[in-house]
Every structure is written in structure tokens, then in C-alpha cells.
Amino acid sequence: MKIKNITNPKRFFEVLNQCKGRVELCTSEGDRLNLKSTLCQYIALTQMFKEARIDDVELVLSEPDDIALLLDFLVKG
Image 1 (cartoon, one colour):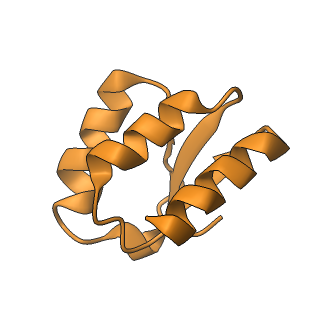
Image 2 (cartoon, rainbow, N blue to C red):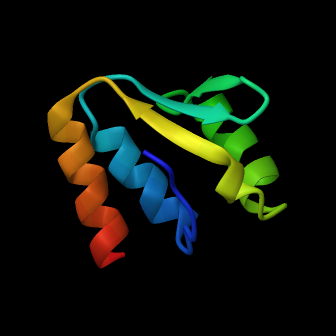
């Protein structure tokens, strides 16, 4: 799932923490960050969102229910 225009990163990470399965952020360079990890969330927040490079990333989710949860957040904001 490609993501962009995350205007509320704090709420975004709150939703990610509700996910039951793995949530990974994949960059165009091939890096994979486990977004269930607080350290990786910090890295994503300080690098990806700060530098507005969010168009180059994709979320990989292991559970179908988590996809619905995130889509709900992304649509409603």
C-alpha cells in the first residue's frame, strides 16, 4: 500500500500500534522498517516525514484486517 500526505504522524502511529500483524515501511532503496518498533517509528518520523519523501515508501501489512484499519484512517484522516 503506497502512502502519502500523512498530515498527523502521531495519529498515524497510534493506528499502526492497533494493528495485529507486521507493519513494515519499505523505501525505494529497499530498506524495511518494522513500524511496530518505537525506534523505527522515530526514524520514520524524523527522516521520512520531515524530508517530505513519503512518496517513495510503501507499507507492507501481514493481516487483512490491518489493511482495513489503515485505509479507514487514510480516508477519514
